Amino acid sequence: MYKTFCFIALLWIGIHSVSAQDTSKRQQELEAQRIRLKNEIKQINQLLFTNTKSRKNALDEAEDLQVKLSVRVELIKVTNEQVNILTRRINLNQRNIGNQRKELELLKEDYAMMIQKSYASKSLKNRLMFLFSSESFLQAYKRIQYLKQYASYRRKQGLAISEKTQLLQQLNQTLIDEKGKKIALIKENRAVQEQLAEEQKQQESLIKSLKRKERTLAAQILKKQQKRKEIDREINRLIREAIAASNKAAGKKGSKIFELTPEAKLIAANFSANKGRLPWPLEKGIVIQKFGRQPHPVVKTTTIQSNGVTLATAPSTQVRAIFEGEVMSVVLIKGSNPSVLIRHGNFISVYKNLGKLYVKKGDKVNAKQAIGEVFTNEQTGKTELQFSIFNNVKALNPKGWIYQM
Image (cartoon, rainbow, N blue to C red; front, side, top):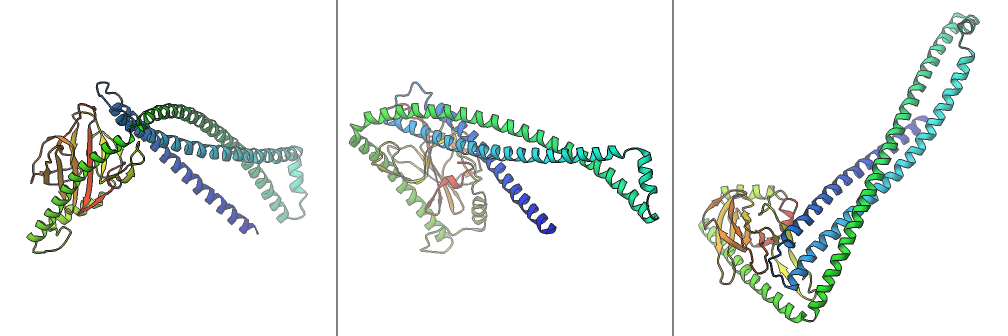
């Protein structure tokens, strides 16, 4: 029974130790995420809301506000989870403190009884009488061992009380620290919620003014989408042409994917191995439009399709290649700004809406090499890069490839 009890106790301690480690790890992840979101809000304010010279229309302003609102909502969600974890840890610490105090009281009571008993027989005369009254040498020896063990047990009890007291002090300090963190997080979250409510009112006011011209706005969004589709079709055509040329050179026809040389295979393998760790195409930027099919952030009745992500950045920001490769094409379409396609084996990174070009078709580029400069719209004050990644002709979500996107 004793062995069974010890096994159950050790199992319980092990489970709770693992649970505490998981909780601590999750709390660290959430704190890192909270800091990133706060920095993102700062960038949004700097990139989208500080240019007083820009002449934003109501739709642009509502779109920009939606970007900030979505990050604020995520920040509130993360902070709430942090507060909930701290609440659970505080409750657990309070239970632990209660249990430790009970154990300390029992130790002290036991120790007090030992002191009382030992005081009654503490004199040398009493101990000698205890030994000399033995009926045999063996009994005397056992009594000597008993006295030694009793003295040793007293010392251990004294140490146990000291250690238990220190543990209680540590638990109390941890509890105070965690309560302080919780209060600070709640205060910060309340301020974020107030800002969110204010910005939601602002956005609601803008949307209300836009409702009257919803059809016109839908037509404007559709026109912008058609322009993007035209560029996407051209990019798709160029990728297919490059695949056909690559396969023809390798003596293979009809294949819809790149036939790779040994060198191109190595580049593609390295590109794939760096999934989730590839650098941003901009030194500083924020995602203002995500990948895939999605409702328009303001005019919900309109659906938009994006083969990549749209990044807002500061004026005169340089665009960087995300990996080593070769400039496959430079796309120039009337009424649109240039786009650059860089091939990395059977992967292609695409950089659209450039104001300046630093490279041309056939140039070899390295990771983080500047290939151009993002175009800034003088009317709206916006500086936006549209960025995509393809595997052969399939568009991939850059979020899964770029570090912490």
